[in-house]
Length: 165
Image (cartoon, rainbow, N blue to C red; front, top):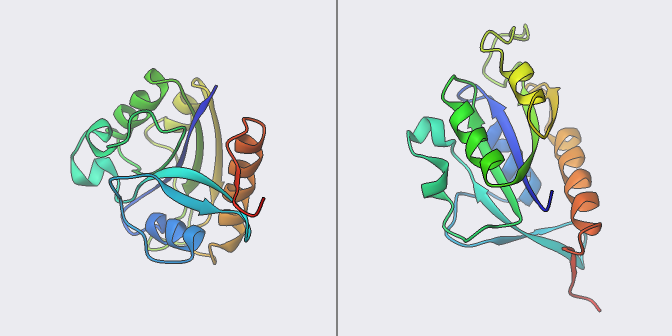
């Protein structure tokens, strides 16, 4: 697949926005244009960020993406039944799903939640990789995993831009 969505899934206040802020090293919000995600001092990729889940906004994700067919989308998603609509949008538009489920999330109880929506099984029937990470610990390790995955995925597709060359 030539497009990817990197999704952080969780309950409200689970650490989704904190994950994106850590990834970019600054407070970030959904924009109208693609932005640069740097891997080091020279290399970056262009990504479109949807921070603040479509489910919380009660807005279809397609209305939030204002760039025509971005190759890499970073998207917060809320753990509720309507999230399947968001994931379906990406699958129907040819995106591979890379999902980090924050379980437990930062504001959740210390006990991980059972997947009472059957979302993990449903996701695994799609073109998807899913990992479960704690939102209660510092975001650096999960952000590192996300960044490494994006870099490897983008590098093999010649999407990494080197501004030092």
